[in-house]
Image 1 (cartoon, helix red, strand yellow):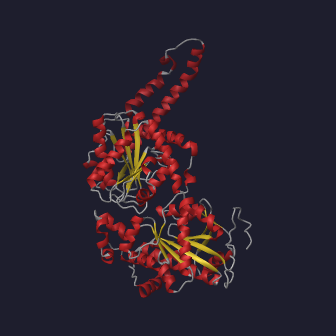
Image 2 (image 1 turned 135 degrees about the horizontal axis):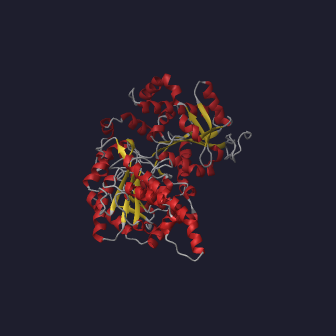
Image 3 (image 1 turned 90 degrees about the horizontal axis):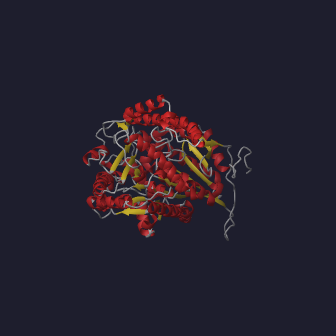
Length: 620
């Protein structure tokens, strides 16, 4: 196949027909073709999007143009992340075939590093016969579906069209090459039992990044891991009204040639809840080169810390001030799962840290940011006013500076030291006095930067119970920011990555975390982090990297520890970090940034290669 004239990238838009040397007694076959199917291809919703996007360069390094991603068509995200290309190769022919059948299928490039081939399917086009698809799932696999669940309807529709695409592709190839299909999470798992039922000739890999039932159980059972071997999983699925999702996930796990998950923590969960032990563990990595700043990362920390200083001044200084040179920024971030993400433990530990810092009287202030998304009406009006007033102070000060510069220079050149008050117009001095007067507030700085819809929010209630009210005498100040940080955010005006670089410590003591991208992103940005032994990432560190603490990565004991003991240990970890001097913190950032290379997909992608090779062997 020829290279498309309209494509100026390093790789053609077609799927080439490279052939392998035949083994004795076998016919010559084209190289295998790998397709990764996921609900989050070109569709950013959570951590799986990061997995898929970040490992693209490593997959292309092995598969080249024989690597194709398949996902749902979402017009809003496709407008930003997708670029259509001419149809070519076997994949392009199947896209045309489906279009001829009245199915909206889009073929092109995903506009991320590597620009991989992608097929996006408009699942709504199968809705007129969705009842037939549901009937087949019930008849052949015992999976019954409610009629009014929008997400399930979308998932089943997407699964049917993904199945159709793979079936047509197998027919088109006619056994000429091995097809490998790798499905991620239950939302992409519907095609697996259907393909196995029709004896699809390819190799199938299924990865669960977290079992849906496990997530529900962990949120509602404080002894989830102790009770794990004893759950009646089907009955619990009915109880939590996720029976259809559970059956899809279980059918996908048992239908795949190779079943995988991201950590040993989740593997144990799969064995008990899904009834199959994963054969390969696929730890999540990052494209570390995307975060690399080489010798610049210490300088970037200083630059973005100054931006956070500005937020701090705008938020706290109208009420009172403290020494910014002795201020440390800690943070936690991620999806709002109050207990699963360890927010309850974090707030309890912060209350204990507050007491310890006040007793030690070190003069250190810890500003702790909780970054998550919660329903809110708007940014708090007082918070916006304070930041607007800070901008006014800066405007006045810069005007005074400009007015002083030339007269002061002339006086100094003439050998005179002038009275500075005589060099500034009375107007600007008066405006400065008025601005400062309007700036000052009698009330305490607010904890929540947004007006939350739910005033009984669990985090707010615990903040009240722990009496973390941002008093002047408190060594720990808490900022509950109920939205993700973006450049359009008027309070910070920076990217999330830039915010993380400006902080000193990330705190992620999860109770339920199949892997845990937030601490990994933290260390990739040169920021030390705390995780837990109940996260896949933390378990990985404990088992395979015994020197992690020297590298700025701390693993909190939660598996066989009480809530009280874990809170004490977390408070102690933060207290010890708060007592490091500047030179020690710089050394720790150097260590953790260099350590992050271990988690580059260049090193971890080989696990995916092992899973694909094993599936090919098992599929024969």
